[in-house]
Length: 251
Length: 323
Image 1 (cartoon, helix red, strand yellow):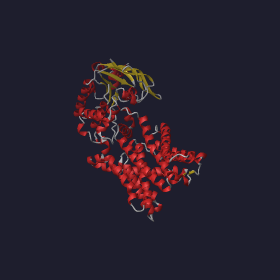
Image 2 (cartoon, chains in turn cyan, red; image 1 turned 90 degrees about the vertical axis):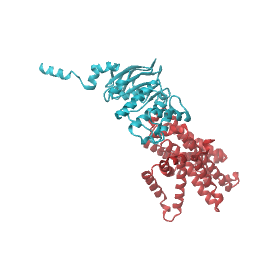
Image 3 (cartoon, rainbow over the protein chains, first blue to last red; image 1 turned 120 degrees about the vertical axis):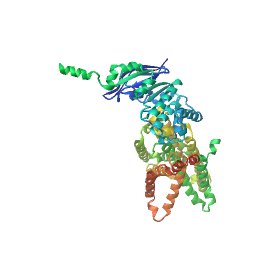
Image 4 (cartoon, one colour; image 1 turned 60 degrees about the horizontal axis):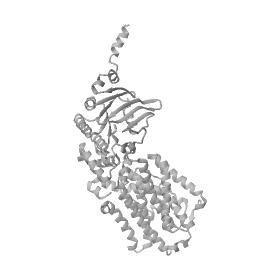
């Protein structure tokens, strides 16, 4: 069953087209990797999906419901959670309270007691249980990323948007986080992840889509995408450019 | 019931009760009643403002506008319609709440300094409006005939009645403040304070939560305004909409600790006690606002979390005692 459908989604900021006519589907239970060079429009696309931005054109359909331009809190209520690329902890609240906000106001709209229980479970799940009473502002980056995860998961979402949860982590932390993401999928949560660490996104994703200058340039399994010349060009430049330049010079 | 017997709630309530019965125990009861009235009123006003300022993070600079609006509405009902003080006080709260709701729709979209400035603008606009409304007495305001007090058994009884109403109201404000802070609604407000966009992404319906916080923080100043001006016997625009009073409320909150239940109660008491001491000292009597300004500066620079915030940050145990 399709959980998310994007139909010709375009987002323009004045003259700049940040997301250009992007169309793709997402099956329930899938992990979809969203990759592309810096500035390709990946985070903007996330913002269009969960309602931070209203797409200039196109439609976002979540579980058969048109959610285009719905306020972000409504997306949260129907089961769409996300983490932020630049972490946004609620600094003066404890780690537990942070996760409780997710639980209280997420899909299940829990009361404080249930929220506390769920928040503790999720902190345990991401390996942050011993930090529950610490103020969120005192955490290091890796811990803040875990907190973002716990907060998003406490909402008991159907679809989780992960925006570079691995960036800035060391090797051991990356491994730990990859395990966590696999476990989330096992619970039946569908995931879209933006990631720059290629080996990670290649090993986790069932399918990849690649954005460049706001347009979708490739879609397929990790193997297919990594062979795609357009993708290689987007990341590394044109592989045949040197050869062609040489030939032009000869001619 | 279990929620009622938490130290976080009991400490401020007991503090107010002790102060409230002080005039009965001291010899000079009329003058200590007046002193305690000012003290307890400040605690209630600061606690009300704390709901929008401390919990939600929206600095409402011109918050006294609700005290003035409520005061005018209630005073008008008493003098023109011949209402009893109690329904008139409720009317004051209701009018303040409705105005806050309407204003909130417009100004709560603004953030940070823009919101703070807008609240000052609202205050000045409201003052200008009232000055030009003839039925509210224009620049002169309204006066209550002395005979009005007869209805309540004479001036003495009236003053005591207003005093105990104020005490009851202050306790009610503390209860509301505590239950907001420890509720799901309060958690949403604090999420807004820390990061409004992140709160919204997590599902907090921010426009609705902010509006309710603003309305809740306006109701009690509206009621208190009626009690205050009824006790005064007259109301005029200069007293009802005096910007520096609302700034003093902010000093009280910052002194005690913004975003805590006990903070504004403690801060309101300490500030008024300090003010009284300064006003009666021969040297400082002309400089009490200067002292308030310096105090605010020192707090913001050195203890931005206020007394209670500072204590709460010291240890886990204190965090359980002080809400």
